[in-house]
Amino acid sequence: AADCFQRQSLSGKHVLITAGPTQENIDPVRYITNHSSGKMGFALAEAAVEAGAKVTLITGPVHLPTPDRVSRIDVVSARDMLAACEAAMPCDLLIASAAVADYRPEVVAQHKLKKDPTTGDGLLLQLVRNPDVLATLTSRADRPFSVGFAAETENLLGYAARKLKDKNLDLIVANDVANPTIGFNSEENAITIIDRELQASSFAQTSKGKIARQLVAFIAERLNRA
Ligand code: CTP
Ligand code: CA
Image (cartoon, rainbow, N blue to C red; front, side):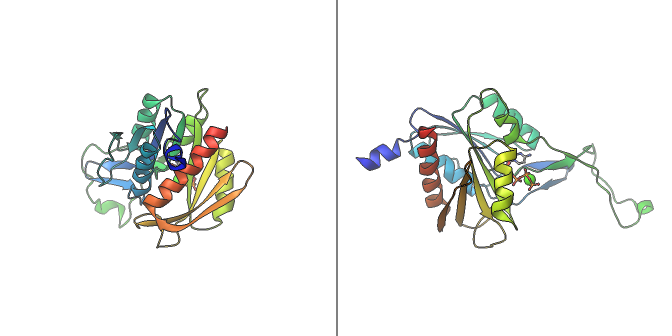
């Protein structure tokens, strides 16, 4: 019975999840992107459905099947991801696991760029900042309970705590991407969750599916307490 109750911990809630990388076009055949398999976000979508939620999964380009009962919206760029999220609002819970490209080329060339012998061996690409999907959604009047991810290679908890504050989050999930056995393309993950009181809770390394269920249970408990 306790397990049943646990499983329905997100019953009646609309959960919006961002996942995967974004791609920012340079020209018709090239783009810049980030490392991201989307596995963590898709596992979270599956776990949230199991917990009774209505789930909208907004994902960049990934090679993953859509989990049962999840509404999936495919996007390419950061700006597309923001527009899709805004269209899917309101939600009760936002989990931002996407690896959004921070910059995009200022102009997208209409035709394939050709190597230019007059400019030597280099190429300068002018980049401009993309919108912050998560921070844009947390600054709305209908701000949901908001969970971000921080993928870092150094000063993990320090940078994660700063992002929690700067993006006005309820929780942030810190991910040590310098460790090759977790994060990005690996099957496993290990995480530390930081709350607004800067209390840290860690989950030991295990499959992304198990981490997702533990994380959803943790988030649901905090959301239902809030
Ligand atoms: N994020 C987002 N939109 C962006 C950049 C980041 O929604 N344009 C979200 C990510 O999905 C993640 C959180 O913000 O939940 C932190 O992303 P991260 O790349 O770690 O932080 P940044 O704020 O981009 O800072 P930096 O890359 O400079 O460390
Ligand atoms: Ca970033």
